[in-house]
Image 1 (cartoon, rainbow, N blue to C red):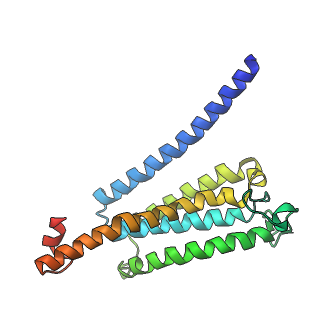
Image 2: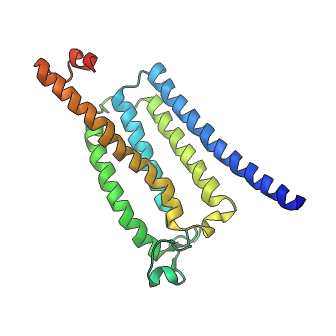
Image 3: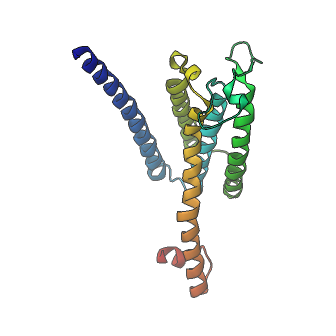
Length: 216
């Protein structure tokens, strides 16, 4: 009885520590964003570019990890998920990928890629790169890459834990940022844009006029 209680306590403590590390890392990233705004005078466009690049990095990493997970997706039926997966190993130094995962991940990645691209193109076109990428923005992107690689290592590579996971486990990391972006566009950016256009029309002035911006 005592041994069982001790085991449950150890498992609970390990879970809390993992979650707290994730929480602390998120706080550090947000503090870095605030520092960039205050110290380096990042514009809204630069913040949007960094945010979208973060989503792209997350999707690229975790969609790639999903290719190496051999377990079936629980909510999917069909012979392809009820039988042993067919491994493909194009690179000897890497674990095998699975053909059923390639088709499954590809179908999901296309939709996400189209949506993210549709948002990123107008944002990137308004960002002036003639003078090159600011060092602070480059460091922020490098920090995002390192942070996400650490998540991949901890959740999928340590002890080869990817062998016990399915593509859905990896996509659970990739999809939330895309959903958050969609919700932000629908419930924040679209209403604010509508209000700005209405104010500009009522005041018979330009949308980027300081008077319009102060009115919001």
